[in-house]
Image (cartoon, rainbow, N blue to C red; front, side, top):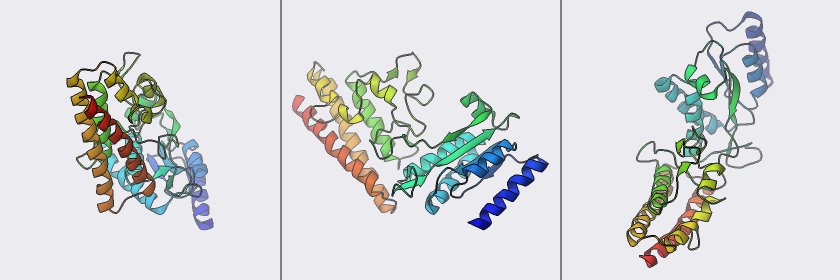
Length: 287
Protein backbone atom coordinates (compact mmCIF):
# COMPACT_ATOMS: atom_id res chain seq x y z
CA UNK A 1 0.00 0.00 0.00
CA UNK A 2 2.83 2.41 0.86
CA UNK A 3 4.44 1.73 -2.51
CA UNK A 4 1.16 2.49 -4.30
CA UNK A 5 0.84 5.76 -2.43
CA UNK A 6 4.37 6.75 -3.43
CA UNK A 7 3.55 6.01 -7.08
CA UNK A 8 0.35 8.07 -6.88
CA UNK A 9 2.19 10.91 -5.18
CA UNK A 10 4.72 10.88 -8.00
CA UNK A 11 2.01 10.84 -10.67
CA UNK A 12 0.17 13.74 -9.06
CA UNK A 13 3.37 15.76 -8.75
CA UNK A 14 4.33 15.06 -12.38
CA UNK A 15 0.97 16.07 -13.80
CA UNK A 16 0.77 19.12 -11.54
CA UNK A 17 4.21 20.26 -12.74
CA UNK A 18 4.02 19.38 -16.44
CA UNK A 19 0.30 19.53 -17.19
CA UNK A 20 -1.99 16.85 -18.56
CA UNK A 21 -1.95 17.49 -22.30
CA UNK A 22 -3.49 14.50 -24.07
CA UNK A 23 -4.77 12.87 -20.89
CA UNK A 24 -8.56 12.60 -20.72
CA UNK A 25 -9.05 10.00 -17.98
CA UNK A 26 -7.16 8.60 -15.01
CA UNK A 27 -8.79 5.60 -13.30
CA UNK A 28 -7.54 4.94 -9.77
CA UNK A 29 -9.21 1.57 -9.27
CA UNK A 30 -8.07 1.06 -5.69
CA UNK A 31 -9.14 1.65 -2.10
CA UNK A 32 -9.35 5.15 -0.63
CA UNK A 33 -8.03 6.87 -3.76
CA UNK A 34 -10.26 9.96 -3.54
CA UNK A 35 -7.60 12.31 -2.18
CA UNK A 36 -5.21 11.48 -5.00
CA UNK A 37 -8.08 11.67 -7.48
CA UNK A 38 -8.91 15.15 -6.26
CA UNK A 39 -5.29 16.22 -6.73
CA UNK A 40 -5.32 14.96 -10.30
CA UNK A 41 -8.61 16.69 -11.01
CA UNK A 42 -7.31 19.99 -9.63
CA UNK A 43 -4.20 19.54 -11.77
CA UNK A 44 -6.44 19.61 -14.83
CA UNK A 45 -7.15 15.95 -15.70
CA UNK A 46 -10.62 16.18 -17.32
CA UNK A 47 -11.99 12.95 -15.81
CA UNK A 48 -10.79 10.99 -12.79
CA UNK A 49 -12.38 7.81 -11.47
CA UNK A 50 -11.55 6.84 -7.91
CA UNK A 51 -13.02 5.26 -4.78
CA UNK A 52 -14.06 7.27 -1.72
CA UNK A 53 -13.84 4.23 0.54
CA UNK A 54 -12.28 0.83 0.69
CA UNK A 55 -13.48 -1.31 -2.21
CA UNK A 56 -13.81 -5.03 -2.82
CA UNK A 57 -11.63 -6.62 -5.51
CA UNK A 58 -14.62 -8.22 -7.25
CA UNK A 59 -16.48 -4.91 -7.19
CA UNK A 60 -13.49 -3.12 -8.75
CA UNK A 61 -13.36 -5.73 -11.50
CA UNK A 62 -17.11 -5.57 -12.11
CA UNK A 63 -17.16 -1.78 -12.21
CA UNK A 64 -14.14 -1.48 -14.50
CA UNK A 65 -15.44 -4.08 -16.97
CA UNK A 66 -18.83 -2.41 -17.27
CA UNK A 67 -17.29 1.07 -17.42
CA UNK A 68 -14.96 0.33 -20.32
CA UNK A 69 -17.57 -1.66 -22.23
CA UNK A 70 -19.97 1.27 -21.96
CA UNK A 71 -17.26 3.75 -22.87
CA UNK A 72 -16.65 1.97 -26.17
CA UNK A 73 -20.31 2.32 -27.15
CA UNK A 74 -21.19 5.72 -25.63
CA UNK A 75 -17.87 7.62 -25.73
CA UNK A 76 -19.15 9.40 -22.59
CA UNK A 77 -17.25 9.11 -19.33
CA UNK A 78 -20.32 10.16 -17.35
CA UNK A 79 -22.63 7.62 -19.00
CA UNK A 80 -20.03 4.89 -18.60
CA UNK A 81 -19.73 5.73 -14.88
CA UNK A 82 -23.48 5.21 -14.44
CA UNK A 83 -23.27 1.87 -16.26
CA UNK A 84 -20.51 0.80 -13.89
CA UNK A 85 -22.72 1.61 -10.90
CA UNK A 86 -25.64 -0.28 -12.44
CA UNK A 87 -23.41 -3.32 -13.00
CA UNK A 88 -22.51 -3.33 -9.31
CA UNK A 89 -26.19 -3.42 -8.34
CA UNK A 90 -26.87 -6.20 -10.83
CA UNK A 91 -24.12 -8.29 -9.24
CA UNK A 92 -25.71 -7.83 -5.82
CA UNK A 93 -23.40 -5.14 -4.48
CA UNK A 94 -24.63 -2.05 -2.71
CA UNK A 95 -22.97 1.32 -2.14
CA UNK A 96 -21.17 1.95 1.12
CA UNK A 97 -18.00 1.10 3.00
CA UNK A 98 -17.35 -2.68 2.84
CA UNK A 99 -15.55 -2.45 6.17
CA UNK A 100 -18.92 -1.56 7.73
CA UNK A 101 -21.47 -3.25 5.42
CA UNK A 102 -20.92 -6.90 4.40
CA UNK A 103 -22.36 -6.65 0.88
CA UNK A 104 -21.19 -3.13 0.07
CA UNK A 105 -18.85 -2.63 -2.87
CA UNK A 106 -17.41 0.71 -1.82
CA UNK A 107 -18.30 4.11 -3.21
CA UNK A 108 -16.92 4.90 -6.67
CA UNK A 109 -16.61 8.56 -7.59
CA UNK A 110 -16.29 10.44 -10.87
CA UNK A 111 -14.50 13.79 -10.74
CA UNK A 112 -14.62 16.06 -13.76
CA UNK A 113 -12.82 19.26 -14.67
CA UNK A 114 -13.86 19.53 -18.29
CA UNK A 115 -13.55 23.12 -19.46
CA UNK A 116 -12.35 21.90 -22.87
CA UNK A 117 -15.54 19.93 -23.57
CA UNK A 118 -14.04 16.43 -23.67
CA UNK A 119 -17.45 14.98 -22.74
CA UNK A 120 -20.01 17.59 -23.76
CA UNK A 121 -22.88 15.14 -23.25
CA UNK A 122 -22.04 14.77 -19.56
CA UNK A 123 -21.28 18.43 -18.81
CA UNK A 124 -24.49 19.48 -20.56
CA UNK A 125 -26.48 16.96 -18.51
CA UNK A 126 -24.87 18.14 -15.27
CA UNK A 127 -25.01 21.84 -16.15
CA UNK A 128 -21.40 22.30 -15.05
CA UNK A 129 -17.91 21.74 -16.42
CA UNK A 130 -16.60 20.83 -12.99
CA UNK A 131 -17.91 18.65 -10.18
CA UNK A 132 -18.11 15.15 -8.76
CA UNK A 133 -20.59 12.31 -8.87
CA UNK A 134 -20.67 9.47 -6.37
CA UNK A 135 -22.69 6.29 -6.18
CA UNK A 136 -25.17 7.57 -3.63
CA UNK A 137 -25.74 5.37 -0.54
CA UNK A 138 -29.44 6.30 -0.67
CA UNK A 139 -29.97 4.73 -4.09
CA UNK A 140 -32.21 2.17 -2.36
CA UNK A 141 -29.88 -0.78 -1.85
CA UNK A 142 -30.74 -2.45 1.42
CA UNK A 143 -34.20 -0.89 1.27
CA UNK A 144 -36.97 -1.71 -1.16
CA UNK A 145 -36.72 -3.06 -4.67
CA UNK A 146 -38.63 -0.51 -6.73
CA UNK A 147 -36.69 -0.33 -9.98
CA UNK A 148 -38.64 1.21 -12.85
CA UNK A 149 -35.94 1.76 -15.47
CA UNK A 150 -36.19 0.14 -18.89
CA UNK A 151 -34.95 -3.48 -18.85
CA UNK A 152 -31.52 -3.99 -20.40
CA UNK A 153 -32.38 -7.44 -21.71
CA UNK A 154 -34.55 -10.49 -21.14
CA UNK A 155 -32.34 -11.43 -18.18
CA UNK A 156 -33.05 -8.11 -16.39
CA UNK A 157 -35.93 -9.50 -14.36
CA UNK A 158 -35.87 -6.86 -11.58
CA UNK A 159 -36.57 -4.17 -14.14
CA UNK A 160 -39.22 -6.32 -15.83
CA UNK A 161 -40.89 -6.73 -12.42
CA UNK A 162 -40.90 -2.95 -11.99
CA UNK A 163 -42.41 -2.57 -15.45
CA UNK A 164 -45.23 -4.97 -14.57
CA UNK A 165 -45.85 -3.27 -11.22
CA UNK A 166 -46.07 0.09 -12.99
CA UNK A 167 -48.53 -1.41 -15.49
CA UNK A 168 -50.70 -2.56 -12.58
CA UNK A 169 -50.82 0.97 -11.18
CA UNK A 170 -51.62 2.46 -14.58
CA UNK A 171 -54.46 -0.05 -15.03
CA UNK A 172 -56.02 1.20 -11.79
CA UNK A 173 -55.63 4.87 -12.70
CA UNK A 174 -52.57 5.84 -10.64
CA UNK A 175 -50.69 8.88 -11.94
CA UNK A 176 -47.15 7.96 -12.95
CA UNK A 177 -46.05 11.40 -14.17
CA UNK A 178 -44.35 14.23 -12.33
CA UNK A 179 -46.75 17.09 -11.48
CA UNK A 180 -44.60 19.74 -13.17
CA UNK A 181 -45.61 18.51 -16.62
CA UNK A 182 -42.22 16.94 -17.37
CA UNK A 183 -43.78 13.55 -18.16
CA UNK A 184 -43.37 9.99 -16.90
CA UNK A 185 -41.07 9.36 -13.95
CA UNK A 186 -37.50 9.51 -15.26
CA UNK A 187 -33.98 10.37 -14.18
CA UNK A 188 -34.25 13.67 -16.08
CA UNK A 189 -37.20 14.90 -13.99
CA UNK A 190 -35.94 13.34 -10.73
CA UNK A 191 -38.68 10.73 -10.66
CA UNK A 192 -36.06 7.99 -10.90
CA UNK A 193 -32.59 7.76 -9.41
CA UNK A 194 -29.55 7.13 -11.60
CA UNK A 195 -30.01 3.40 -10.94
CA UNK A 196 -33.65 3.51 -12.01
CA UNK A 197 -35.31 3.47 -8.60
CA UNK A 198 -38.38 5.54 -7.74
CA UNK A 199 -37.41 8.63 -5.77
CA UNK A 200 -39.27 10.03 -2.75
CA UNK A 201 -40.74 12.69 -5.08
CA UNK A 202 -42.22 9.99 -7.30
CA UNK A 203 -43.54 8.05 -4.30
CA UNK A 204 -45.28 11.23 -3.13
CA UNK A 205 -47.06 11.44 -6.50
CA UNK A 206 -48.24 7.86 -5.96
CA UNK A 207 -49.55 8.89 -2.55
CA UNK A 208 -47.18 6.83 -0.41
CA UNK A 209 -44.01 7.25 1.60
CA UNK A 210 -42.82 3.67 1.14
CA UNK A 211 -43.14 1.56 -2.01
CA UNK A 212 -44.45 -1.26 0.14
CA UNK A 213 -47.43 0.90 1.11
CA UNK A 214 -48.77 0.25 -2.39
CA UNK A 215 -48.90 -3.51 -1.92
CA UNK A 216 -50.28 -6.16 0.41
CA UNK A 217 -53.92 -6.90 1.18
CA UNK A 218 -54.40 -3.42 2.69
CA UNK A 219 -52.12 -1.42 0.39
CA UNK A 220 -53.11 1.44 -1.90
CA UNK A 221 -53.46 -0.88 -4.90
CA UNK A 222 -56.09 -3.07 -3.25
CA UNK A 223 -57.83 -0.11 -1.62
CA UNK A 224 -58.05 1.64 -4.99
CA UNK A 225 -59.49 -1.50 -6.56
CA UNK A 226 -62.08 -1.68 -3.78
CA UNK A 227 -62.90 1.98 -4.21
CA UNK A 228 -64.68 1.78 -7.51
CA UNK A 229 -62.37 0.25 -10.11
CA UNK A 230 -64.18 -1.67 -12.83
CA UNK A 231 -63.98 -5.44 -13.07
CA UNK A 232 -61.90 -5.06 -16.23
CA UNK A 233 -59.44 -2.76 -14.48
CA UNK A 234 -59.10 -5.21 -11.59
CA UNK A 235 -58.53 -8.15 -13.97
CA UNK A 236 -55.83 -6.25 -15.85
CA UNK A 237 -54.17 -5.15 -12.61
CA UNK A 238 -54.17 -8.74 -11.33
CA UNK A 239 -52.57 -9.95 -14.56
CA UNK A 240 -49.71 -7.48 -14.21
CA UNK A 241 -49.20 -8.33 -10.54
CA UNK A 242 -48.89 -12.01 -11.46
CA UNK A 243 -46.29 -11.04 -14.09
CA UNK A 244 -44.34 -9.06 -11.47
CA UNK A 245 -44.27 -12.05 -9.11
CA UNK A 246 -43.03 -14.31 -11.91
CA UNK A 247 -40.29 -11.82 -12.84
CA UNK A 248 -39.08 -11.52 -9.24
CA UNK A 249 -38.94 -15.29 -8.90
CA UNK A 250 -37.07 -15.52 -12.19
CA UNK A 251 -34.58 -12.92 -10.96
CA UNK A 252 -33.75 -15.06 -7.95
CA UNK A 253 -33.26 -18.14 -10.11
CA UNK A 254 -31.15 -16.24 -12.66
CA UNK A 255 -28.63 -15.05 -10.09
CA UNK A 256 -28.56 -18.44 -8.37
CA UNK A 257 -27.65 -20.11 -11.67
CA UNK A 258 -25.01 -17.46 -12.37
CA UNK A 259 -23.73 -17.94 -8.80
CA UNK A 260 -24.05 -14.20 -8.23
CA UNK A 261 -26.76 -14.49 -5.62
CA UNK A 262 -26.61 -12.00 -2.77
CA UNK A 263 -28.49 -13.15 0.36
CA UNK A 264 -29.67 -9.63 1.24
CA UNK A 265 -31.02 -8.87 -2.23
CA UNK A 266 -32.60 -12.32 -2.51
CA UNK A 267 -34.32 -11.83 0.83
CA UNK A 268 -35.71 -8.50 -0.39
CA UNK A 269 -37.15 -10.23 -3.46
CA UNK A 270 -38.71 -12.96 -1.33
CA UNK A 271 -40.27 -10.42 1.03
CA UNK A 272 -41.69 -8.40 -1.86
CA UNK A 273 -43.01 -11.55 -3.53
CA UNK A 274 -44.86 -12.39 -0.32
CA UNK A 275 -46.32 -8.87 -0.06
CA UNK A 276 -47.30 -8.68 -3.72
CA UNK A 277 -48.82 -12.16 -3.57
CA UNK A 278 -51.22 -10.82 -0.94
CA UNK A 279 -52.12 -8.06 -3.39
CA UNK A 280 -52.84 -10.63 -6.09
CA UNK A 281 -54.95 -12.77 -3.75
CA UNK A 282 -57.07 -9.75 -2.84
CA UNK A 283 -57.48 -8.63 -6.46
CA UNK A 284 -58.60 -12.12 -7.49
CA UNK A 285 -61.30 -12.03 -4.81
CA UNK A 286 -62.49 -8.62 -6.09
CA UNK A 287 -62.86 -9.75 -9.71
